[in-house]
Length: 143
Length: 85
Image 1 (cartoon, each protein chain N blue to C red):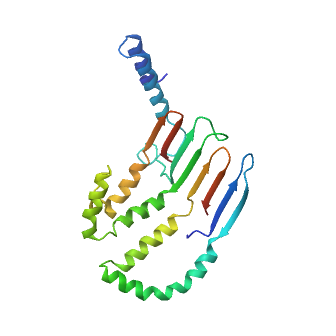
Image 2 (cartoon, rainbow over the protein chains, first blue to last red):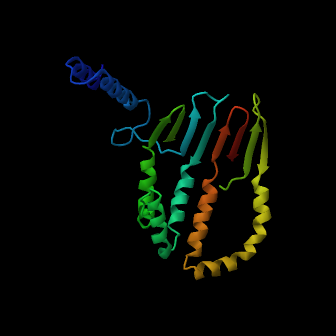
Image 3 (tube, chains in turn brown, red):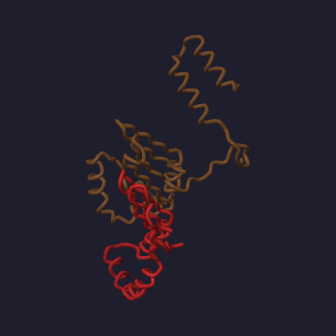
């Protein structure tokens, strides 16, 4: 048994956390559990670069009766799309930023530069969005 | 590498459908004569104060990046798959 797992169980036994919290923490631990894979020069596990952004929408009824949408977008296409934003003329960026902000997307397009593009795309590898509403689930993740 | 094929499959209830392969490379060959319009594009880019080579580079990147894109949609009666290969 790992030390972290023991700590969680001890906290549960002492009543410091509820069973739900313990279950959630144990679930997080399991998700972080190391799997066999290459390590980099520092000894830490090398993080594989994601190749695709996936958007999956499914309903509880399943494929036969419910609607299912599965979209796979290559990260290369995302990179190219971000570069496309850099082609916007300077005088057009203000109105575009305003329009994005008014639609709830407060992004400053002038901040998207080639030097921080890779960092932006790399951050997407940690992105996982799960939305569940009624009988439908939406998942956005990288693979 | 630019996409060469487009796979489209439309299926009905209980069947996956027959895949239809669309040869995109033929489309690129057909579009090749448009290269004659490149001087116009260069002039247009300069008027729009854009670096034409950068514009070409970005669109080339989009074309290359589109390979591997896949969209699947299905409901109880129909299923559609579009994949760029």
